[in-house]
Image 1 (spheres, rainbow, N blue to C red):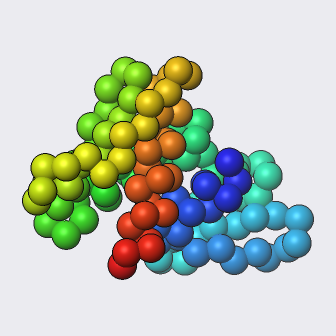
Image 2 (image 1 turned 30 degrees about the vertical axis):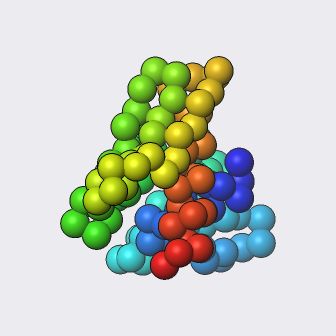
Length: 114
């Protein structure tokens, strides 16, 4: 999960800047620290408060080119121009894990194609 959370943080424009080797400090564009190492790790995989801004950013890429659709058992991410699902993540776990997995897959694909 650590690598995936780092991927989401970078997608959101956060920068990694370790002040001490034992802490992982992430800063926003205004250089304000938002995490404090192991005391407050990146929480994209455990908190809707962290994950939903990622969903909102995906929804607004290129003037709303993509739509994230969250259902109980799965999440789809659709290209609105072609009306095709580009990510369809089924899960037998829970709604958050399905959404998280779909967002991670989307960002990996998006980064390859930009």
